[in-house]
Image (cartoon, rainbow, N blue to C red; front, side, top):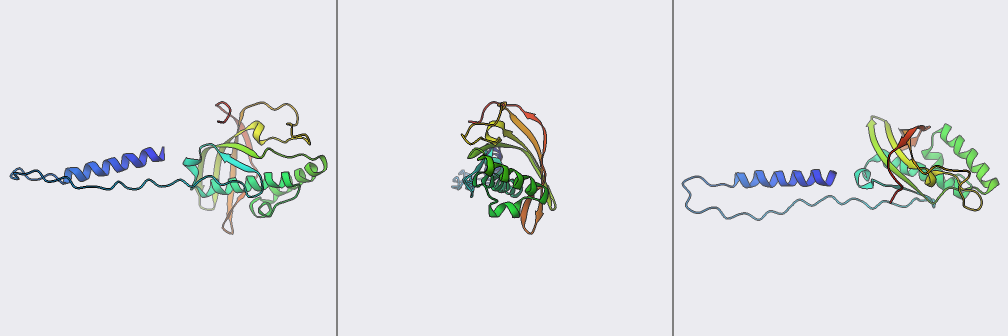
Length: 196
């Protein structure tokens, strides 16, 4: 969508420029068209892999690749999942998870270590919306259930998991230059089939 808007903006600029180049009625020769160089399309940075062996793959990355709150959410979620898979809190967990979330993750990590549980290496997530006001950001996400659930010691999902997009309301707070994940709320489901 942003690329389309950018291209519409470039086209409108070229049209205005061409209209301004027209000569007066008295001119005998039409002015030679000037060569224009189109504005470069901004390059979308590639989606980075998680630093701790677990990656949150954002399905609509092109729309949110430069959104600081979305990037903060991605890092915090990868720290949480990486902690689960490494059976210890990774360094980013203590910086990017609020105290209530850190307590929950610590408990899951302890249980996971004992029972040899883990989470999938890739979590599929779509961002529905992202709004930032001052030092607080609110996101709405859709998370593909099998990719965000717990795996047993054999790498199989714990219990029966419905294949669906679960909808969450997420709050992050900016503290010491980092977006810190607050407790999240499950608010329903999102439409759509399995991620591509």
